[in-house]
Amino acid sequence: MDRHIEISLEKRGVSCVARLLDDRAPRTCEAVWNALPLGKDVFHGKYARNEIYTLVPAFAPEEPGTENPTITPIPGDVAYFSFAQWQLNTSSHGYAQGGRPQAAQKIVDLAVFYERNNLLLNPDTGFVPATIFGTIVEGLDRMAEAAQDLWLSGVIGESLVFRRA
Image 1 (cartoon, rainbow, N blue to C red):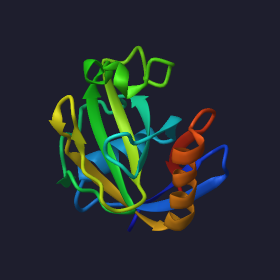
Image 2 (cartoon, rainbow, N blue to C red):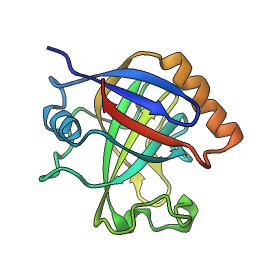
Image 3 (cartoon, rainbow, N blue to C red):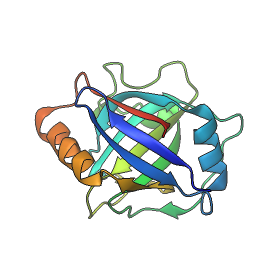
Image 4 (cartoon, rainbow, N blue to C red):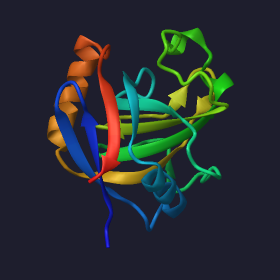
């Protein structure tokens, strides 16, 4: 039986539904499912291109590791990244104003890719493979329009929240 999550931009009142890819990323799907709801401030991708994401403290009892990896996500991909706190310390990332979880040793980035031509390349560290653990099956057009508005209008005051559907 398929499991689904709702992904919302709270202030804008926009949401979409994603199907978990339990067959391709079982450890990641289970870790995310068991930790829901998750979310916080939203950011728009700076290097990856057409991506919105939130950063939360690591939540899995054991890091799921890389599954179903890609460096070229497509529209509708829902991704999981795990970073050590030092990897997000570069001031150019823009997290100095409180967006990065400060107390966590590990930080999880939950992301939605809303358009094509993405490349997961960080100029500081090189390629950053993502675990694709979900695919949006409803509402991608609305989420893409709202994500583009985040890029043009700004992200301040907006949050990205993942919950069970």
